[in-house]
Length: 386
Image 1 (tube, rainbow, N blue to C red):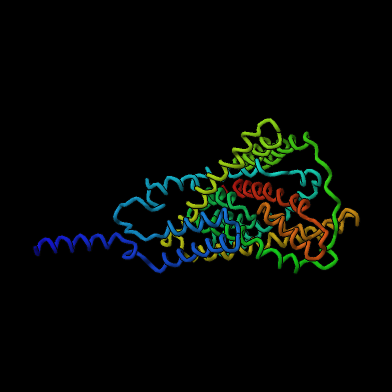
Image 2: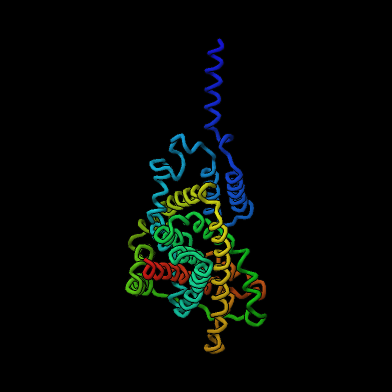
């Protein structure tokens, strides 16, 4: 009988070493708390729920403690585990181009086509990327890491993942979570900057209604856009090619089923896989480092710089435009790639000062230009860093 109880006791002791309770650390508990905060923000505040719920729940999955030496093959960083296989879509850069295919298939570029000068506003907002790149270099990150960190300023999660997978895979978890976090916090971060940098007269500028765009123009835009951008930055081809291909599927009018698949089931499936695995990659032992904290700080700074750059560029641009053709600086924030949330913020803040001044369609111009701009910026960084 004594031998039986010794045997049972040993089994229970062995079992205990496998439990999460025995392997939990303060880091695991901290990251689980962060995951719960993400889920709370998504459910209670409706901040980018399609992103924050998969990422937040992925954080819970990735931070369930287990015995790393037991060879269980359940962790995202254990080769051959299910999570590790799914994570290959992130580390190998498969998911971001597929996301861009869906974005292209659901995006209407009419506002940009009708007023091409708004492309300059989207381009100006990309200064946040290169500003953060230079600051990261000054803080001691090597050029490839700095490039990956800087892309957070574009507020484009797929582009941040794509670029960091090429330049700094070891920082990808922190960069991806940072990029998606600031995308979700657009309604919190941008309005104070917009109000600070504009005056009461500028906020009520009324822009001319966008002109009607023909079907031919809509079909030609993705073709011309692809050729112009990829001839300039061939390294951006995976993102830009899929973005413009998705848009051609939408605008051609003869591939509706393909466009619906790309903008519906496909992008939804990839978003689930990408969000869940990015969240799971925040495993405390790999994620909680001083570099991660710096990346979050630099991400916030780059996002602020990008927003401010867009608004200030419009103010400068207006000096060269006639009074009848001036641009409301409140749409300058939309130059970041958070589609369509940053355009909605332009509309919301604009209505606070003029209840009949509808800026949404105008803001969509720099907003979709920001999608193109962030992909071009990623291509430029890849071009001279690799």
